[in-house]
Image (tube, rainbow, N blue to C red):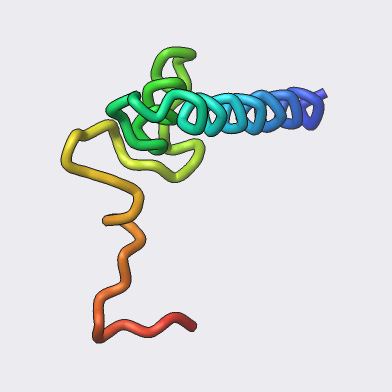
Length: 76
């Protein structure tokens, strides 16, 4: 039963992500970045952004900044 609920949540999140990606493609005048759209959608349905490992919605924060690699770090 719990597995079914978890699978439903993740399938809904994948559908949501696909929908937001299409919104960004077809409406390029939207002045929000993709991760901000995703965070807004998560907040609107009452899900915490930590589900996807995202930070709280902040105008200055972007996913690109979170995953940026500094010159002295290496990827293992």
